[in-house]
Length: 354
Ligand code: ATP
Image 1 (cartoon, rainbow, N blue to C red):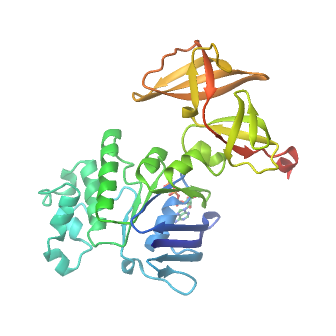
Image 2: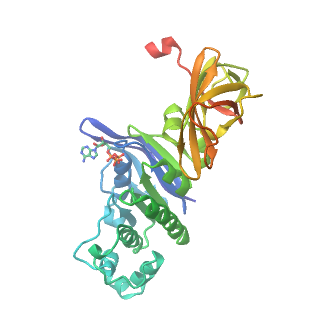
Image 3: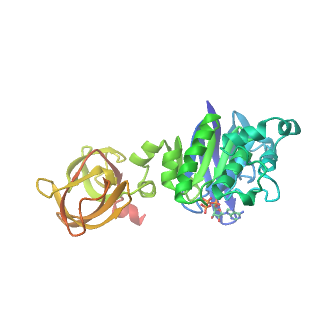
């Protein structure tokens, strides 16, 4: 069932086109992450759905009920949308329980709703604390509980973990996802952290300059980015230029199959390889050899920066290996590629001049 539908939503602030023809659909119970660089329109999108911005054009509906279009405008308080703004601050002079009860009716306040919400976010017994007596992560959870308490039909979270350290961030991501799934909430979460988007969301929308450039499930987004901009923004990418013929592409790694992305008449392409698609080993018997430039160890994996010997010079590539790298800067290695590659048409010099 379609929960949220946005059709061609646009919003301009003076000279800035903050949203440009944004169309999106989200099913009930799904979580959408909105990913994009600073200033691309993520917050404006959330605020437009919540009713705090007045789009210039387009339509927004939830559960088939029109929130806004050319003739209709539903006030924010009538939308039943739970909105946690960026740095979702609590009311500092109210206890945790009173913060959570803020948007509830008198009957709801008398019910067990507040204690249910405290239990849901794992904060039983902390209702009488003041916000300043809580850790950053606990405050974040109270902000979430406050947004969920009135049983909103849609939950909007604007960078909910931006103020937290890495450990807390990872733990809370999982908690928030579990909480939202447990109550079957439909949610949109803004982030500029691609790992957060891929790990938490059912679908990810990538925005750029006010446009929604791609909406896809996390695996498709990572494997089949719509363009080179998305490829570079969502994860590490090595880009190589090569000729295309009959759905195959001739690269220094031999003939590779094009997964998707290049039209049939395309002659030259930029191909995109993720670091996991490379295999490195001893130089003997591999199609390509190269030299290790540097390694970056992340604990569970490592990135190796390599300079591969190509027929016409060299190509710099990035390879991911599990655990600690078995190579050091200066080592010579053999490099192979596994799997299909994404290919993007290379503009001809005429296209670039146009
Ligand atoms: P960030 O990740 O930095 O929070 P964002 O993707 O959420 O950015 P928005 O806050 O939606 O971006 O802003 C989109 C553009 O619209 C930016 O260029 C911003 O400066 C501009 N903008 C947003 N709100 C206003 C406003 N009230 N008046 C004028 N310009 C605005």
